[in-house]
Amino acid sequence: MLMTKDRPKAVRTLRGWAISVLQEASAIHECEEHGWAKDRADPDARDHALSIAGEDPPEGLSPEEAVAEVRDVLDAIGDTCPECIPES
Image (cartoon, rainbow, N blue to C red; front, side, top):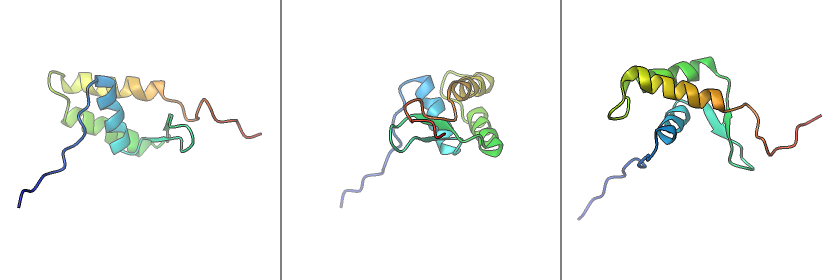
């Protein structure tokens, strides 16, 4: 019987890689209605994401550059969805 192994999704951009690291660490999540990434504001999850980035950077990037990219992406993500109506 031929067996196939599930492969992780290929990430084609550095930003995409950083987003996947942040999702893996549960530092960000998606708005259920619109799909925008939202910061969970969890310091432990952020630290975990930075640890993952430093320990397993993408090919061609130093650990410091990988951590900097994850920080840059995280800084660009807010804690609210821009399409959701704010609750008053």
